[in-house]
Image (cartoon, rainbow, N blue to C red):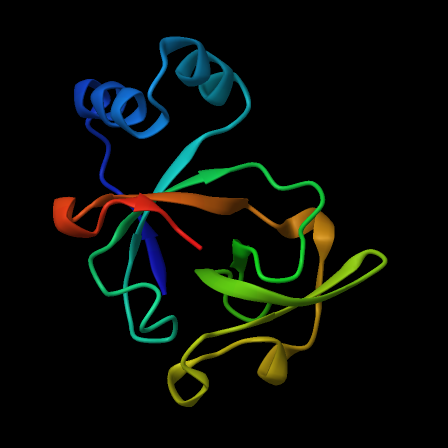
Length: 133
Protein backbone atom coordinates (compact mmCIF):
# COMPACT_ATOMS: atom_id res chain seq x y z
CA UNK A 1 0.00 0.00 0.00
CA UNK A 2 1.13 3.53 -0.69
CA UNK A 3 0.30 6.57 1.38
CA UNK A 4 0.63 10.20 0.32
CA UNK A 5 3.50 11.82 2.12
CA UNK A 6 2.50 14.30 4.82
CA UNK A 7 2.63 17.80 3.35
CA UNK A 8 5.50 20.13 4.08
CA UNK A 9 5.27 22.91 1.52
CA UNK A 10 8.80 24.27 1.92
CA UNK A 11 10.29 20.79 1.85
CA UNK A 12 8.26 19.91 -1.24
CA UNK A 13 9.84 22.67 -3.29
CA UNK A 14 13.35 21.73 -2.21
CA UNK A 15 12.67 18.07 -2.95
CA UNK A 16 11.27 18.85 -6.39
CA UNK A 17 14.23 21.03 -7.31
CA UNK A 18 16.68 18.37 -6.17
CA UNK A 19 14.77 15.61 -7.92
CA UNK A 20 14.25 17.33 -11.22
CA UNK A 21 17.40 19.39 -11.26
CA UNK A 22 15.99 22.51 -12.87
CA UNK A 23 13.57 25.26 -11.88
CA UNK A 24 11.85 25.10 -15.26
CA UNK A 25 11.24 21.39 -14.72
CA UNK A 26 9.70 22.10 -11.33
CA UNK A 27 7.33 24.70 -12.74
CA UNK A 28 6.29 22.29 -15.48
CA UNK A 29 5.87 19.42 -13.02
CA UNK A 30 3.78 21.47 -10.60
CA UNK A 31 1.49 22.54 -13.40
CA UNK A 32 1.05 18.97 -14.60
CA UNK A 33 0.36 17.17 -11.34
CA UNK A 34 3.62 16.09 -9.70
CA UNK A 35 2.79 13.94 -6.65
CA UNK A 36 4.77 12.51 -3.76
CA UNK A 37 3.98 9.17 -2.14
CA UNK A 38 5.49 6.90 0.51
CA UNK A 39 5.81 3.13 0.02
CA UNK A 40 4.27 0.77 2.57
CA UNK A 41 4.45 -3.00 2.33
CA UNK A 42 6.56 -5.58 0.51
CA UNK A 43 4.73 -6.04 -2.80
CA UNK A 44 7.37 -4.25 -4.90
CA UNK A 45 10.50 -5.64 -3.25
CA UNK A 46 13.32 -5.58 -4.22
CA UNK A 47 12.65 -2.56 -6.47
CA UNK A 48 10.90 -0.54 -3.77
CA UNK A 49 11.26 -0.84 -0.02
CA UNK A 50 8.88 0.28 2.73
CA UNK A 51 9.66 3.90 3.53
CA UNK A 52 10.86 4.78 0.03
CA UNK A 53 9.56 8.19 -1.00
CA UNK A 54 8.66 8.53 -4.66
CA UNK A 55 7.81 11.22 -7.18
CA UNK A 56 5.03 10.58 -9.68
CA UNK A 57 4.24 12.35 -12.91
CA UNK A 58 0.97 12.00 -14.83
CA UNK A 59 0.85 8.95 -17.08
CA UNK A 60 -1.35 9.07 -20.14
CA UNK A 61 0.28 6.26 -22.12
CA UNK A 62 1.82 3.63 -19.88
CA UNK A 63 4.40 1.25 -21.30
CA UNK A 64 5.15 -2.31 -20.27
CA UNK A 65 7.66 -2.16 -17.43
CA UNK A 66 6.61 1.26 -16.09
CA UNK A 67 5.92 1.60 -12.37
CA UNK A 68 2.54 3.25 -11.93
CA UNK A 69 0.27 4.28 -9.07
CA UNK A 70 -3.27 3.00 -9.37
CA UNK A 71 -6.18 2.83 -6.93
CA UNK A 72 -7.18 -0.65 -5.82
CA UNK A 73 -10.61 -1.07 -7.49
CA UNK A 74 -11.90 -2.87 -4.40
CA UNK A 75 -10.80 -0.49 -1.65
CA UNK A 76 -9.54 2.69 -3.30
CA UNK A 77 -6.16 2.52 -1.53
CA UNK A 78 -3.29 3.62 -3.73
CA UNK A 79 -0.99 0.88 -5.04
CA UNK A 80 2.28 1.06 -6.96
CA UNK A 81 2.69 -1.76 -9.46
CA UNK A 82 4.57 -2.61 -12.63
CA UNK A 83 2.72 -2.49 -15.95
CA UNK A 84 2.64 -6.02 -17.35
CA UNK A 85 0.39 -5.38 -20.34
CA UNK A 86 -1.51 -2.57 -22.04
CA UNK A 87 -4.57 -3.58 -24.00
CA UNK A 88 -6.37 -0.61 -25.51
CA UNK A 89 -7.91 1.24 -22.59
CA UNK A 90 -6.97 -1.38 -19.96
CA UNK A 91 -3.72 -1.90 -18.07
CA UNK A 92 -2.63 -5.07 -16.32
CA UNK A 93 -0.46 -4.35 -13.26
CA UNK A 94 1.56 -6.72 -11.08
CA UNK A 95 3.87 -6.51 -8.08
CA UNK A 96 7.54 -7.44 -8.30
CA UNK A 97 7.03 -9.69 -5.25
CA UNK A 98 4.03 -11.83 -6.31
CA UNK A 99 3.70 -13.62 -2.96
CA UNK A 100 3.08 -10.28 -1.20
CA UNK A 101 1.20 -8.44 -3.96
CA UNK A 102 -2.42 -7.55 -4.54
CA UNK A 103 -2.60 -6.76 -8.23
CA UNK A 104 -4.40 -7.51 -11.51
CA UNK A 105 -4.25 -11.21 -10.73
CA UNK A 106 -6.73 -10.47 -7.92
CA UNK A 107 -8.81 -7.61 -9.38
CA UNK A 108 -8.21 -7.78 -13.14
CA UNK A 109 -6.98 -5.05 -15.49
CA UNK A 110 -7.66 -1.43 -14.58
CA UNK A 111 -8.85 1.35 -16.89
CA UNK A 112 -5.97 3.47 -18.13
CA UNK A 113 -7.84 6.63 -17.11
CA UNK A 114 -7.57 5.76 -13.38
CA UNK A 115 -3.77 5.72 -13.31
CA UNK A 116 -2.60 8.34 -10.80
CA UNK A 117 0.90 8.62 -12.20
CA UNK A 118 4.16 7.01 -13.23
CA UNK A 119 7.02 6.67 -10.77
CA UNK A 120 10.02 8.62 -12.01
CA UNK A 121 12.27 9.03 -8.99
CA UNK A 122 12.98 7.87 -5.47
CA UNK A 123 14.10 10.89 -3.43
CA UNK A 124 14.43 9.23 -0.01
CA UNK A 125 16.24 7.52 1.60
CA UNK A 126 19.22 9.47 0.37
CA UNK A 127 21.37 6.38 -0.16
CA UNK A 128 18.78 4.89 -2.53
CA UNK A 129 17.69 8.11 -4.27
CA UNK A 130 17.66 8.39 -8.03
CA UNK A 131 15.62 7.30 -11.04
CA UNK A 132 13.46 4.20 -10.53
CA UNK A 133 13.60 1.56 -13.24
